[in-house]
Image (cartoon, rainbow, N blue to C red; front, side, top):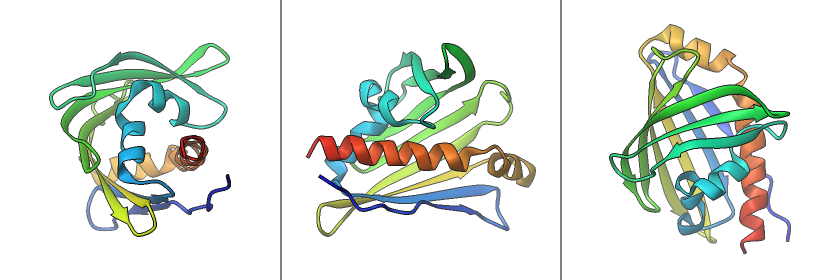
Length: 162
């Protein structure tokens, strides 16, 4: 089964230290949301195709936390950790996100899962950081390639589950 190729919008607010990421998926929220909270699904799509993900700790519930590493050829490239502040199934996920290489650069991410006509979902993630410099660093990090490739992998995963 083929899916529609959706574009990802990545918007750096010019006035506030936040980044908004918007993407539509050809599946309902009850199919899309688990990809953010089920560790076995998460590792299948997060990040670029050249990397694998290794979960060190994963407790995707309100008050839980996580730590995972991006791996290339068996070598740990980057590690991320945070806390799940709110897990509202199929609707909303609020969490902190920190790259271990810059532990003072924590972001607060609120992700919503909006049901659209035709069995689709719009995922909107708003990341708030502590400064415009942190926002600029986030945008310059190369995250766009990883986000786009990851979402393409998620499209493929969702298509398999139809």
